[in-house]
Amino acid sequence: MKKISEIFSQYKGLSKSAYVLFLGRMITNMGAFIWPLLTLILKDKMGYTPTMISYIFLIVGFLFLPANILGGKLADRFNRKRLIITFDCISVFFFILCAFVEPGIWMVIFFIIAGLFANIEGPAFDALVIDVVKPKDREKVYSLMYLGHNLGYMFGAAIGGLLFANHLSLAFVLDGITTLSSTILIIMLVQGVQKVESEEEENEYEEGIHETEKISNILKKRPSVFVQLLIFLMGAFVYNQWTYTLPMYMTDLFGDDLGSKYFGFLSSFNAFVVIFFTPIITFMSQRFREIPKIFVGQLCIGLSFIIICNQPTYSIFFVMMFIFTIGEIANMLGSAPFISRRVPSTHRGRIHSYMNIAWFLGAAIGRVIIGWILEATNYSVTFVSIALFGVAGVSLVVYNYYLDRKIFPKLYSATPAQRKEVQNGTDYSY
Image (tube, rainbow, N blue to C red):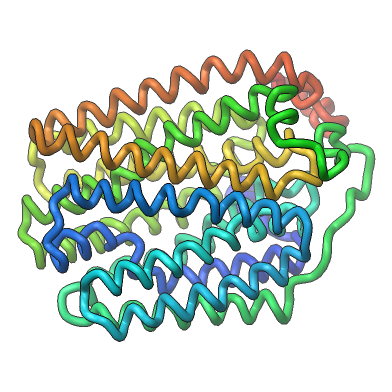
């Protein structure tokens, strides 16, 4: 019972702003009907082939690159809270416009514009999360943000699957309203920066340097950060197949109407597993460093696709999604803090923009390559190929572990509080 109590009490004592951002993230994703269904909108509402859809995602990904770069520079130069408010409002306006046009070119244009402004805002939000929490609480706060994301998404995905066939316009409107509501929360309640309060929390690798220092110079001096960006790219290549290949697979197996509903329920199950297991995995993995978590996460995500490669029954998709989601949680708990502890505070916005760029490139390239494989072969070969790309990403994680230990040795040393536990047999060296 004591362990169970510790699992749920680990989120106590965080800053007020952390709880506000958690609530805002939950509200936003409660209306996140459209993004998971975008592949189905292009395929079933607009009649595009898998290859055409992959090209659209590729074009959108390249359009988002300058938006992320601009967003990163703005986040390091201007007030991050005001940036979030401004670009969220613009994004919501164009997103709601999608509700007033039929599925077609104008819907795609409005959707892309909304996404552009959302991506300009992204680096500011990521950096703000770091700004308003204590360094020692970052894993817990990232875990909490992830819970908020999935608490909202659990309901949103299922509702989106139900609205997809006959009420797509309503889904756009509700998505915009919920995003606007979370923005209002940030305006009213998010406070300023939390300062480091003790020597134990200090990390010399985060100390600010002159903001004019080029990102390229930082990456040359800290190559494991650059390798982690490549891991983000490889991870996105594999991870995003669950919103590209998987929904097409399910509509081909079960039909357009039933397949979209099944995919919505499966997406909600993904969120349910995140909600139930994130606190448990966060608590159990406290003694592990970031890269071992990333290793486990990438491995589970990649290998999960093997389970569904031979036209399984619907119930087997839930087994696949369970393993996939456990990997998703572990990867998040490792990836999010990894960057924050190895990048100067003056450059967080720009580095987060590069993270987003790596993610978009990986997702877009992955859709194109997997689209080619799918049209040339079949789903069985396609899912095996996805798993092999996942294994390649895991190999890169192993390489980065040894590289990172050489570059950031102090991050692999135990803190005073951890040294007491080392005396009791807990090893914090990995």
